[in-house]
Image (spheres, rainbow, N blue to C red):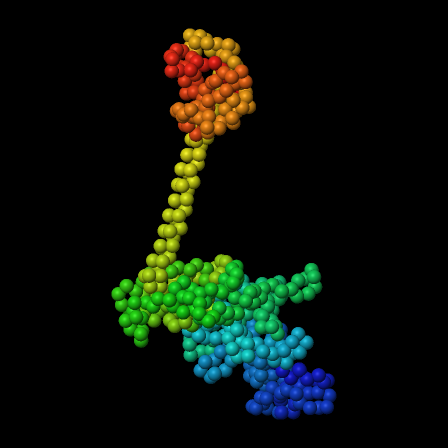
Length: 490
C-alpha cells in the first residue's frame, strides 16, 4: 500500500533491499525509481515484513519495535483496517491518501484525503490542494455532515483528537471479523467504501462521498444553500439576495448599522430562523455552554451570524461568511440563521397573508355554493309549481264558479296565428303595457279586432299571477274591459 508515484514509469521493476538497509524499486536497467530514504539504518541488518493487516514494514529488529519505514505512513489510494490518516500540527506533518491519476495510472493524481483539525476535526478531500469535500465535524461518534453515516462502532471509523498538542488521526477499526471492506480514493475525487461479496466473488461499492453537486465544497458560494431536491439547486439563505452569483445581506442587523466594526449587540437585534436537517457550515467556533445558552451567546455577539447545537459537540457558533450549507432529507443539525426583525416579520406577514387568503377563499366558495344551491332549489320549486299551473290551464276545465267560463268554450290560437294578427307583435300595434307585459291590437281574418296580452319573463310575474288575472277578466263585465274570447294553445 506504499505510494505508487514511482509506478507511473512503464518499465520492468522490482522491490529489493539495498546494502544500506533501504527499500528500493528499480527498473530492468538497475535504475532506482524509488527509495524509502531512511538515513539511520544499520547496513545489512534491516528486515522487511508484510504484516497481517497489509502494512509493509522496514525495521532494524525481528520484533518490529524499531520500525524505520512503513507503507501505512506513506499510503497510496487505499484506506484499510488499522491504517491512519493523521495531521501533526506541532511538527507540520500529514499522512494522507493520494488518488491515482487514472484507473490504470497509479502515480499521484489530483486528489488527497486527510484529516483537518479546523476547530473540530473533519475529514476532507482536496483537489490540487484546494478544499473539495468535507465530512462536517466529528462529534465523537460520527461526522455530522455525512447523511447516512453509522456510529464508529458499526462503521469502523474512529477519530482521535483528545489533545490539541498531539497529532489528530483517523483510523479504521472493524468490529466484525466476517466483514471484508476497504476505502478507496478514486481518480475522480470520490472516497468509495467497497465490501467483499462472497456470492459474487468480487468487491461491490457500498457508499460514496459524492452523491450530488451539493457535496462539492462551497458549491453555492457564501450564504448560499444547496438543495439537490430543487431546481435550481442553489439559492440564497433568507435575508440575502443574489447578486452576480453571490448572496448579500439585504438588511443589516441593528448592531451592524450602529457599529460597522462589529461591537456589542444593540437594540432590536432581531431573532433567528430555524432551518432543519442542515449540513453544519464550515469554520465553526465550538463552545462548551449548554443548549439553553447557545442562542443567547450568539445574540449578544454582533459578529455571530448563525448557531446550532449537537449533543456530542455542544454549542456551535459561526461568524463571517456561511459556506458549504446544504439541505439534507434527513439527519444533519437544526441551524439557526440570525436575521433582523424586519426579515422575520416578512416571513410572519407572508404566513398571515397566505392563511387569510386561504380562509377567505374557503368562505367565498362556501357562500357562493350555498347561494347557488338556494337559487337552484327555488327555481326547481317555482318551475314545478308553474308546470302544475300550466298543465291545469292547458288541459283541465276551470269551473264557472272560479273563472266564469269553461276553457273548452274558448277559442284556441297558436303562437303563429297571434303573431300574424299583430303583424309579428309590431310596435305600431302596441296598445300599452300592463304588469305582465305589453298589449297588442290584432285583427283576425274575419275582420274581428282583439287585444293580445303577452306575458314576458322579464316582467317578474309568473304563470300563477297571470292565471289570477285571467280569472278576474273572465268574471268582470265592464264597457271598458274587453271580454275574454280565446287562449293560446299550449
